[in-house]
Length: 156
Image 1 (cartoon, rainbow, N blue to C red):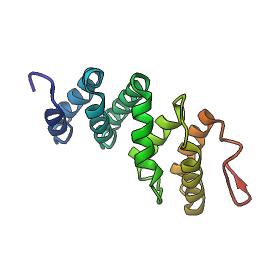
Image 2: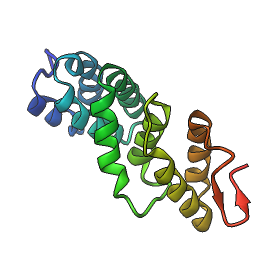
Image 3: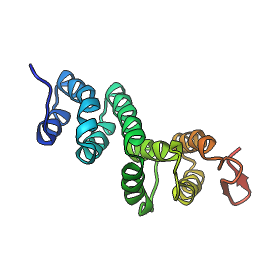
Image 4: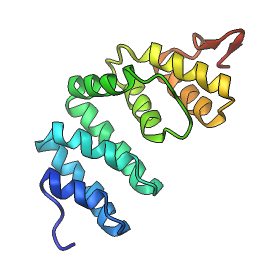
């Protein structure tokens, strides 16, 4: 690709490409795109967060953090809409787990506690170490670490 994508459609195509270099260029270019098109950038960043390559996933997660800093109300609302209705959690839901982490780290993270508690309870019931580890990591940011419980088993 000679020029980075500059429309939501071009980003979408680039992020779905089988070419790693194209996906990498697109996720890096998202940092500029989100400054001018935050609503479109949210969906594109979520798409990139689901990338199989951890480098692209990490860059996308960093971009979501930048977007959360730029437009916290929109990001909090969109993450809340996506995760607030989620009833089944698994360590395989990497994108949603990462979004939960972004939400937990936000200054205004209203509504994250019940979602985190549900995810923790299911992680405990399923003995899902990946999910438990991530939730524990995020709970530090919300102050929920002492409050997350599943029966008699605490998060500690």
